[in-house]
Length: 210
Image 1 (tube, rainbow, N blue to C red):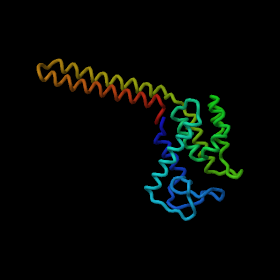
Image 2: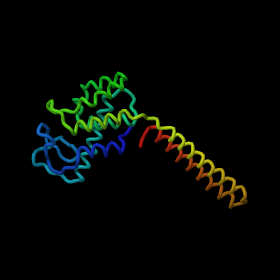
Image 3: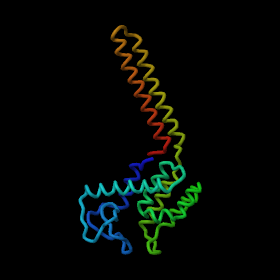
Image 4: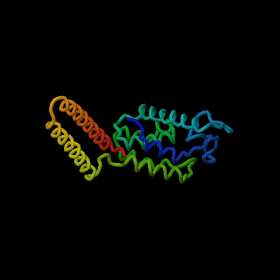
């Protein structure tokens, strides 16, 4: 599984882009770019391109952390929530967390309940962390299955694609010779393309990706 665009935008929205080293809070460490902290010192300056590169590297490392530590299946929503969460707290904290222990026991409800507890620095509640944990938990708890309305949309799409394909084949039968062969080839490509599009739509909706 890979992190979604929603998750990347979500993290960037909370971390914000800052091209010089700064302290997010008085109890924090030197930070730069989109929440990057490794090897950052007071006075450090980077470009936006460097910030984007560091962000991509940090996200890749977070995905590796999740792969190393999470032993149960995750849907896309749960995965996105954990990527944001681990991006923020780091591997050492995640590895020893009650959240991870509950998650690896298959207690998804219990793991979800741990998000709100990670909203403090030095035992002080931080409003930004409270908001972030709330939204991460909402993402984690989002049902994978879509509504009946979306199921109906899939059925409608199927009907439209199949109707178009059948109509095209009917029109081809009225031709003859070389024209019919060319038309049949084109119709075949159209049918295969329609089937591929439908498969991708069903796959995306089945994963619960917005």
